Structure formats: structure tokens, C-alpha cells
Length: 261
Image (cartoon, rainbow, N blue to C red):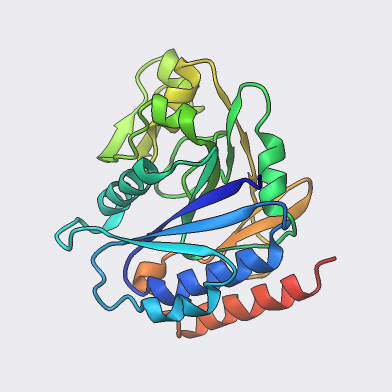
């Protein structure tokens, strides 16, 4: 029996067009060894157009999950959506995926699964070492990451965020976050991921955050084995999918993927 990988997609403002592009891209670049199911967590966006996804019905299962309209925006809302979707995951492997990412490699599903060996129970994107809002390092983030579902459900993963800057006080937490004592970080959506894993003897495999210049020249990129793996436009909730940057990003993704071997 073929395995189904469940993709948990947090969808906010403008996200129906991005989620449409995400599914198109996933179908073009997957290995074909696994089925895909998309949970679309729709938060604070009553204009979300589900009719856009009718064309995929014969290829993939898509389940919309409506989150109450009074759910918070930003990181807090993101966490609430991911918690809701993660509780619905039933397959051996699932992924948290931002709606404005796209894969830049073929067989991304198999490549991520192959990283999950031994005590490695999570594999995916990592945070930038620089930036105004420092996060933990050297461990997967929620942006585009695959999980061994039951292990993380048993660990009672909570994607909740704690707002405001936080100063790392001791060696234990320096090891969790992979930043020196005294560093100031932001405990954003999913900040508990490295803590839960390390406290319970688990590890993670990361895609490397690519510093500039990137392959596409627009958006963020995460690489694996010296090649682009996925791209993240970033800021989709504030960027209508029809604006120039979004159109440029989508066009460059399509062009790059069309030339993949």
C-alpha cells in the first residue's frame, strides 16, 4: 500500500493563489512514490476561493479546515492553525508547509523521507543565522519540514509562540537554541521543536539556509547537497499574489522547474 504524506498548510490572507501554486509545484516535482494529501488551514480569510482547487481532484486529496474567524493574525494565528492541522494528521509522515514555498528539486518527498533515519525524526528548512529577529539554529523550522507524525504527537508538540525578545540564560538553553548564552532570540512559531527533540533523545536534519546570491534572485532559498531544494517568497499575507514580485517569483520557479532533469 502506498504511503500518503500529509501536507499541513497554514493559509491566511491572499493565500488561495499561493496554495494553488504550491500544489501545482508539488505535483510537478514529487517522486511519484507516495500519495499526497493537503490540509488547508484557512484562517481569517473568508474570501478563500476553494474552486481554484477543483482541477486537482483527480490527482490529490485536498481538505479545507476552517479556523474560527476571530483567530489571531501573525505568528499566534499561524501556531493555532498548525496545532489544529497537526491534530488531524493520521499518516506516518506529515509536513508543515507555508503556502508561499515551492520545491526546486525533483523527488523532494523521497529525499526528505530518506533523511528520517535512526533518531532523526524531523527534516526540513532552517533559520538564517543573521537577521533582526534571531531564531534557533541548526534544527528544522516550520517553514517546509517533514515529521514522523506519531512521535511528535506523542511528544505533544505545541507550535505556540511567546512574544517579545528573550535572552538565553544558561548552557542548557544555549544548546537548545544553538546560540551563545546572552544571545537575544525570538521564540516564534515552533520554537519548542528543538527543545522537545533534544530532551527526548531525538535529532533533526536540516536544509541549509542559502545566503545571497540565490538561484532565483528573488525569495529565500534552502539548499541540500549543494543544490536548491526549495524557495520561500516570504510575506505572502501582506503581498497580493498578483504583484510584480510574486509574479516574478512564480515565473522563475516555473522556468527553473521546467529545466530540472
